[in-house]
Image (cartoon, rainbow, N blue to C red):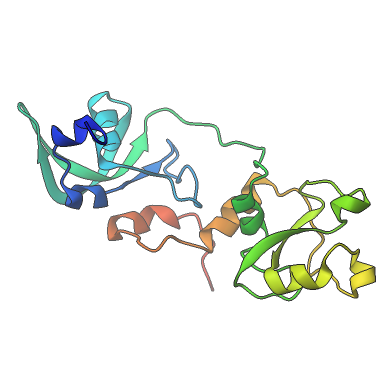
Length: 194
């Protein structure tokens, strides 16, 4: 049989894929801002049935099983507090987030890649302290040279970010879709403007 045989026996309406649930920690803060902590609607209902979350807000859409009917949760709160990670993983995405999706040489926001400040051929290592987000033109211009040799400078010296910094950066880049029921929970701890 071609493909996954289960697709012939499982009905998965495409419309229901578009009902993610915002997941909040027990202190009513999102587990993460970027990527935003979201679960598929199936996981949210499963967690609610297993009494692992409290449903705070729901969509106007209903799903049914043989024995029950459930409104799809749009916001759920974990019943047990999950301690946030202190160490930020060194990934391409986190590097771009640390540098706010901006080339550290010219400041442009398009066509990003990453660059070793001290080239690997000159003893540079792949670490938070030596890698920055760079646009392709700046990366090509710098090439296999040091900053001095290339006549370039950095906007900010690279360093390992703190988890709190990454959360703050993540708030600046919300996903394309934010359901209105999420708004009260995403920025409630943000500082108010005078």
